Length: 285
Image 1 (cartoon, rainbow, N blue to C red):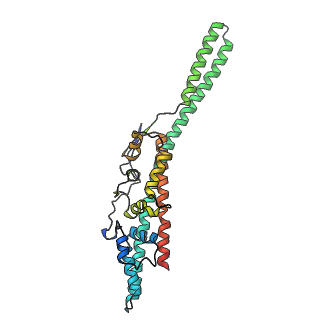
Image 2: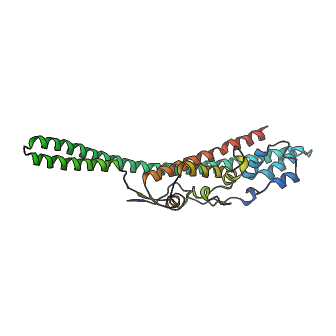
Image 3: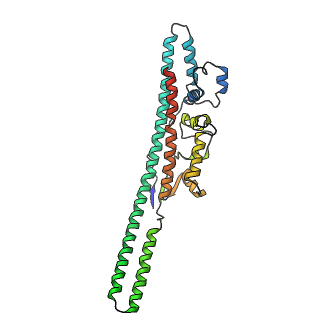
């Protein structure tokens, strides 16, 4: 059994996020107290502004644009640039997480492919042995003149040949010790209120119901449900602990399942760019 504990996909540094720009848990009270934002921005854009931490900056921008002070125009330009800088930072956070998910998926797929190739070689060798032994048995039975000996050779050779063929038909139990101390699947599965591995903007969007297409459940809830229905259907408690824990002994199918879940999650994270584009377009007007 091979051991793989080096996770080269994890960030080499720990990121620190400015508390002043963290998403507010409930923005309804903010919007009710100050209605200047709702005529210009949609609820969807305001939620994303809260996710990126620029909601207070948008309020300041609108006040500056309404001001008649001589230096208000210059200040509004500076404020707009400040907002765009925050959105650029949010974009890099999304890109960084998507890159890590992509790397983790490729890492799992690479080892799964290695195990698949080893199994293919094993099956090929057993199949060749079965064919060769079957051919040798056929030749031997034609050369041996004794009827009893012919039967013994024929039956023995047939049983052994069938045995090799049967072994080829069974899947290998070859496994690899695959570690993932920083597991990006864990928080999606257990659904905590706060995440220690996801950037605040990403975790807010994944868990706010209004960012999903239907709006009944959050994106993270829908991802988890798809895993449960299509990837982990019938999975044992041990398999769930394997996927969402710190790692363990993976077989090829387990690694393919892990890569599948990581790829699904990566697609959902990348879709946040669509929301970000909507807010940037509104700012450009």
